[in-house]
Length: 185
Image (cartoon, rainbow, N blue to C red):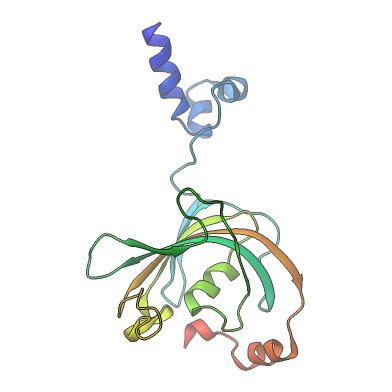
């Protein structure tokens, strides 16, 4: 009995691909319950210096600048090599998530946040490391809420929940035209 429990516990920790590799097959894998997500689907960086790690791939087309997005996020801040601290988010321990709705690529968010979300697809979950120049920079949020210190690296966990129909206002369309790549300044 003890061996069976140990085998079941070990098999539960396997990812779907490794379950198949160990000969469990689709039926055996399904019988053991959901697999833990693989370490990362893909990792990368952008020209601007944004780094990301996709944990769950999304589907469909990426959003357009001027489109409204619904997103869950957790923001942690790293400064001076210390472990990142929780600062803000739509997901908080013990509370139901309340997705953030905002218009993409019109300067409503920091450049690194916009750039990250514009590269995602609905259903995607990724961790994004935003360097200070794409975040709050040399000032942090001093004088506003003082949550983000100067020159802080921001670490977001993002999940793109949905996209709303593309309908930017005239002012947003003008801003998009005048600022083709605001995160590459």
